[in-house]
Each structure stands twice: as structure tokens, then as C-alpha cells.
Length: 317
Image (cartoon, rainbow, N blue to C red; front, side, top):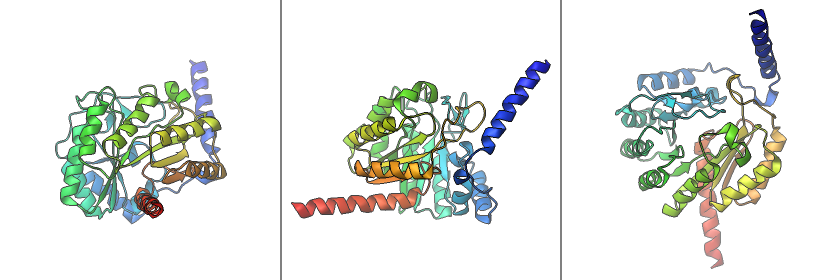
């Protein structure tokens, strides 16, 4: 019994030491502002979940202070068990029929110019939750027609084409689906998903409606190699993905995948330059970058970049 207790104590001590060694460039202040409290209260009052909380995002203090929050629909329990993700896994509850209305109410009360909607995986639902995404988009268009809408969906395993067609018809402004990591690491990091199936999903969005911006992201620090990152960029460009995000993976708990490397800001900058040279309209690359971090500002820049590109092409004709 003592040996077991000693082993547990050593493991806990090693994890705490690892957390203490976190570099200065990814340390953030604890949220304490009035804006943070107001955002939290609104989410509670409307019974909305946020990925900011569920995924333990390091930027929650900054974003919520500015009254920016990424709403997580379809409940707070995921049917997958990815080794990087802090969202609960298990059998989800029934859908809240008021959730689409409540999301639109939150967007209106916060005065959002741009909103990001994500979700848990719902492999238990016949459409994977696609219809619920559509209802959320429709309610937002009714209540806050000036708000641009960015969605971050799961891969809709086994029902992708029909699900994507439903959502594309509702016309979100940005369709995001994260590849998360390089193909070699999928069996250990994202075992319930398939790399090329995720690429095909984003390609399908463009096939159905080229005007919708597509976006994807990867985490760094999981043990990927530099040339593997370059290959992911090339694969994304082959699928005509407009926007790439790259950020540092942080281990949520001792049970999750370990951080293999802390990638420096300089390395992120260099990778960002390579990505821009490959033709992405927009690139966000820094240790604290997350899918929805500064999403509104990034969307405005991406839209301007597309307009400039189209104007340049027209001028050459």
C-alpha cells in the first residue's frame, strides 16, 4: 500500500514540476475583471456551455473580459475520447430545444459582430448534430442579422456528406474543422477520427459553396516533426483551406497526452511565414493561438485579403 501511495506521490510531483516548467510566454493571468464576471453570468443565465471553460482555454480571461465567448452546442458531454481534449466523455443528454434561441439571445445581448459556434461530437445522433447547427445559424440570422457566423464542427463520422450539405445550405460565413495534429499521431492523439476524412470534409465545403471561408488548425508540441507540419500545410492548401491556426498544446490533466515540446514564439513566427508563402489567406501562429482566439479580427482581415486578391486578378484580365 505504501509503495502505491509513494508511486502516486512521485507521479503527482513530476506532473507539478512539469507544470512549473511551463515557459513564461504561455503563462496568463487569472481572470478577475468585471467583463469576465458579466460574460460568465450571461452564459449561466441562458444555460449555455462554452468551449472556453470546457477545454480550459488559457485565453478565457482576455476573451471574456472583452465579452467574447465561443459557445459549445449539443451539450457538454462528448461521445469521443480524444487524448488532448478536456471535454467530458460519455453518453450525452437529450438536446436542449431552446439552445438555438439562447445562443442568438447571447449574441444580441453581448453585441457580437462575429460569433464562433462549436460543439461536442454527437455520434449518437442520426445527423451527428448537423440539424442543430442549422437551427442555431437560422436563429442568429433572425436575431442578429449583422453578426458574422463562424462554426467549428466535428467530422460527422459516417454521415459527413449529408451533414455538411445541410450546414453549407444555411450559409455560415466561416466553416472550421480542425485537423488537430499530423497524420502519424492520429492513433494516439485523435483515435476516433481519420486525417484524410477531415480533409475531405473541408474540401466538400468548398465544392458545395466556394464563397464560404474554410479554416482548420493544428496543435504543436505533441511530438510532430517540422516536415510533417509542412506536409499538413500542403494538404490543407490542396483542399483550398483559407485560414490556418497553429497553437501550443497544453496538457489539461495528468491523464491526457503529455506535452513533448514547448514551441518558442520564434518558431511559431517562422512556421507562420512558411504558411503565408504557401498561399493561405490568413494565418494565426503563436503559442496562445486557439481556433477562436481573435476570430472576429482575423475574419475581417481574411475577407479583406480575399477582396484584394480578387481585385488583383481582375486587374490582370
